[in-house]
Image (cartoon, rainbow, N blue to C red; front, side, top):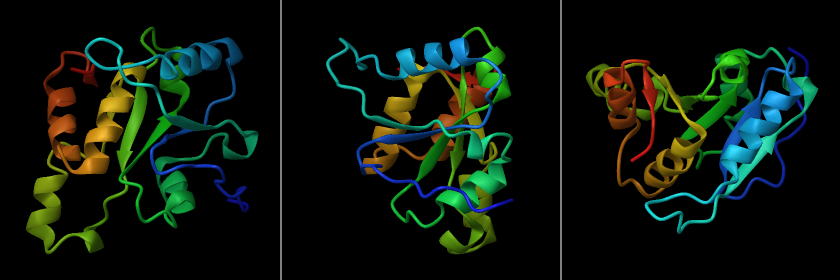
Length: 159
């Protein structure tokens, strides 16, 4: 993997979305349009999202993206717009925790926090409540992963 451009302009209140698939520009435009929609019960919250739309990120794996964004110590989750996102009807993004074994007290703690894996799919509408609640510590990644796990299609669909 060659050096990636630095992630700049990312505010702590912005959900970070990294585009890794560049085969379908209209699908990407649909994803972005959905991401910038107001969210919440009555659409009362403004969407805050920072999208990386740079072909240098094309084809990167989850681990490569995590390595590239690891310098941001405040980032609890990163969202990938990958091939599955672009091809699915609901454009579900891949939500990936930045949590590592080293962030946990012990193996048991890490296993509990990643019981349903370190990633799950979420609709664009779900990106904001996942990011907001993880940022303030209201809910944990494992809770969202469990809800996605319980969905027939394996997708967190927002409250």
